[in-house]
Image (tube, rainbow, N blue to C red; front, side):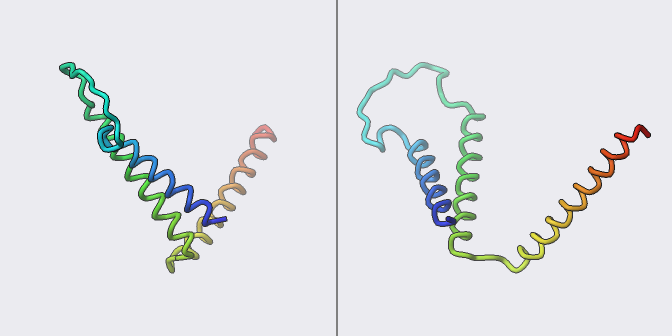
Length: 103
């Protein structure tokens, strides 16, 4: 199951790389007329870079999970987060009960 996730992440990374390549690198031969001021905005470039870094990070995470690499701290962090979630849900249940009784 994890190898499927890793393959999907790597496929997504390849799709992002293909989107980021210029059309000439992909073999397209169309000519466009340049209009002043129609360049890519800085915000679009930063968004593309952020998306690319996110995809690379997800691909690295998926690959490490597929290779069953578990850092030492991940087991204790998983346990701690699970217990924190249990305590938060118990606190929420107590708050709902308190509000339901009309206090």
